Length: 426
Image (cartoon, rainbow, N blue to C red; front, side, top):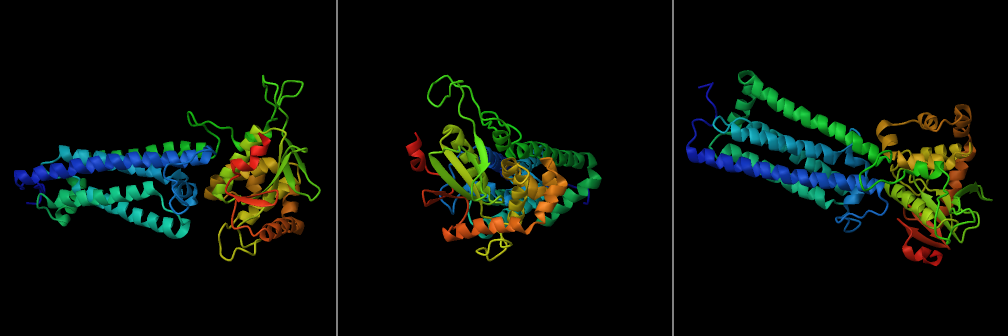
């Protein structure tokens, strides 16, 4: 009976069990979608809010933010969690369609195949978290559990009515010929979900790069912090000059040739050792900018290059941040044209864009409209690497264990500047 459905010959109780399995499948898909939405929120907020701390940032080895900030959290320039939302929406709608087509059993083979793909992707991401990122994400693990549940429900949806896997798969694939309109509807749902993920994920990527806004979470991008004059009107007298404005942020080069920002007459001097490919350095960069804003005229931040790249850092014994040395050179060469802090902000703010699109040094220089001939000449100048080597040697002398690292009064702080270190400024 080649034209007969795989479920029409099954007893009524088999179809009732099939109905229960599909409803459970829809429920799990919805739960998975909600978890993926929460993961997306972590992805965005960990990039734009320097004070954000996720509830699942439990420890160094169990931290959703660590995973979200890694380069592995995006696919095709979009957060993986957004693709997951689209996938769960597709599965829920496909299972719902299966409920409406309960008598002929359509869609169960497709549900099985997609569920298998989800489980395999989940295992691949678990491997990445364990061996490449070095931290687990609780929400990601919850998604993996959902995926296993979906696979179990997909199997039950086939086996409960007494159908074989082969029959279910064959029937769904034969539907391409027998029921082209139905298959076209499935294709529309699938590609529509992917299209929505592509558009929405692209918008989030813009926000994650600091060039857009999330309602309630809008922050100036670091580019704005250096491109605009830091003069703000204020009504109180504390911290205001005679014109009723806060002290202006200054920039300069110290006697050792290091770039600094803040105040020339600062009460506190902070040396920051950073790496332009380090996601934690980007967050620390935003926090330092906020610290300068909160304590105008009282802090000087001196930038030091400490790329975790074996190309210019002998303490790194394996390939790690493969372009970190190059990006430091780019910042130094921008500095020789008087644009260091703008480039510094650009490299941090557009780190994901630089990585995913593979922007070259020349392309990055064009973004800031640097003189191309002078820039290229600087890149070829061996003294640039000497500057980096000096910073690396000093960082090694302080026995730095990673980045970002902040040196204040001879003491090293990792990750961020603790409140107690700046209490004297209050």
